[in-house]
Amino acid sequence: MSADAESRWPAVARDYVQAIADTKLLLGQRYGEWMLKGPNLEDDISGASNGQDEIGQVRQLFRLLEKQGVDRDWLETDREPAEYANAQPLDEEAEAWPTFMVQVALSDRAAWLLLDAIRHEDFTGMVQKMGEDEYFHLEHHDARLETLAVDQPEAVEAALERYFPGILAFIGPATYGAGEDPLVEADFTDRAVAEIRGAFREHYVDLFAGTDVTVPALTDDVPDPDEWDEKRRRSGDGHIDQRVADQLQGVTNREYVIE
Amino acid sequence: MKYHVFTRNRSGDDMIHAGTVQADSDRLARIYAHRTYDEEDWDFMGVVREEDLLEVNEEPISSRGVA
Image 1: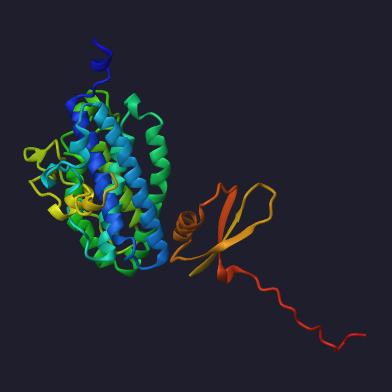
Image 2: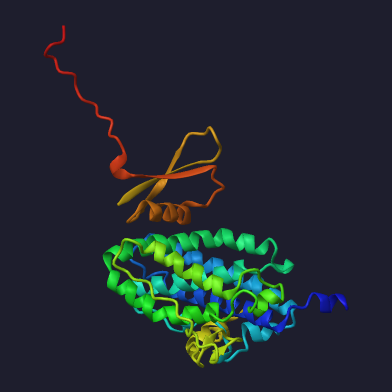
């Protein structure tokens, strides 16, 4: 086997990393949209920092994907909206602050859990550094959700119900248990999707304990394993708006590019 | 609530008052302080609620009972 073939990831692993990278790309977009709309300056500063971290992480993940043969132009500037594999809740801009906090909290934590499960040597050191960034993202979200759960429990619960199915689809189907998860079988990750789903929900059950917020239950048919798209880690063919894709690809202000 | 942010560059240095943050909880205050004032490689950063600062008063001693 050639060195190149030895370093090649399986196709399911490329799709997995693509979905994490695209989720982080859209997290950067959504943080950016809200960086001047938070309830106070401190939230704006934290959100802007989170957005910068995400874009930096995307650059690292895109670099690895390019080494795996993914076309750089396609990654950065030459994609249709339906070719982005971001977590489904990030398809839309949240219309209110509590909704936004739940949207980015769930998406950011799920992306981190998927990233942290990777054991491939190409990620050694990189994931640890990203984890240093993510500590502050996730602490910000949880601390904010703690206060929102007291002040606006109905809004938090409604957002959880709205986004939980899409986030569970992003994490993966319940049928990917120990011995059945193709990424664990390929030795690319060390934590099966079914275990990550349980840990993810348990985190929010603990966070909202003692409040009026109920966390949606885990159901094995969300996502429906027969309808789940492994490549885009979702069910259905939803996608970001063309306007957002244009912003991500630099189309909107291309005339000002310095050659 | 208003929190004051204190930092120091090296162990043993005096604390520097870096600024303030508004936060709804101690947990949020720590994050806000880090995100807002983490521009140097601080040895220590801490926050304290403004209400927990003890005012040092300069009160005149009563003349009554003083010899």
